[in-house]
Length: 325
Image (cartoon, rainbow, N blue to C red; front, side):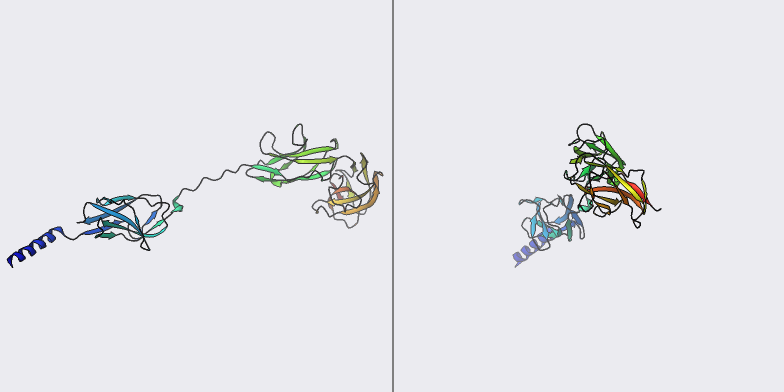
């Protein structure tokens, strides 16, 4: 009986000296957000669990991901931890355990997030200024002495003004300046000088001596008929009888032509007919300006008979004015 009492007292003394086995995780704390790719400290305090411990990341569903190797780490209360980019974002806890798994400490619940908002914004994209001429078609009917509207688009910061030239195909050799326009207008009517020869050309739009330019596909200029009256200084009046004159360079597309008026701002297929089925060899025709025609700036267009008055189907006059009497 006495021996038993002594053994019980001995075991009680050993337990009293050893104390309880505990692990308390102090960091991360509940509510913390850990960003992927950033380093954080896992901290804990322990008692009676030995020289080594193992650390795990525990998902909300209970899946354990080992942070330390199988042999664990030194139980010094500190571990540097960086969430990997492959870790799913969500809510987790950290578990620090004794090597035999009998003692375990759990942190408060925290989140692992990408934290993209903390990343530095990417540098702004460099926009290279460019200018592009609207696609041309060599089958469009363009005439020496006539007019044509050149259109273009731009990207990026551009100079205030651009020049519009007519060059041999491919924009090589010597060019002819047709107009200077505001870049922001993105279109400009140009007139083909009467000194030009018939043949193939290309439009060039841009700033000479810079890369801010574009060269169009080839176009074809015709020299067959040239309108000589009306011209830029001409002023016609409503109800007035006037003379239309043209010069014949060579045989026109058809032996008969129509004489039409096209007003600035009208759609290309909208026109006022002044004469129909006139022999192209006549070289002049007296016509009467309608009393109800709107006032404004007009261009006289000679088109082949039956073309419907569509602009660009024949030579054009310079812009001129129609006013009230």
